[in-house]
Image (cartoon, rainbow, N blue to C red):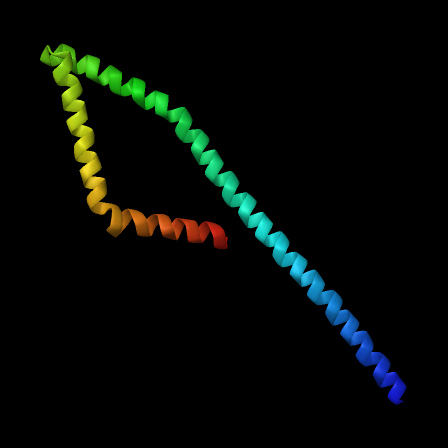
Length: 114
């Protein structure tokens, strides 16, 4: 009878070792999945930004040229656009700590935990 209990305990220990090994592999695989998902999201965002940069650059040049015809000064139209982006940059700098940083942090955490 004691031998039977000993055999059952050994069997349970072996199964626990196998289970813990499988559980460890699962954790590693989930970590790899999260890392690859996060990296692919980052890289796809970088690609999208790289495609839109020339679009926005050409759009701004077009706006400056159009504005130069309205105000009859090419240099002034570029200064007006520069001032516009300075205002946007200052506005974003003021909101950075209160709105932008927490929103990005929450987005990253949600992405990692999904």
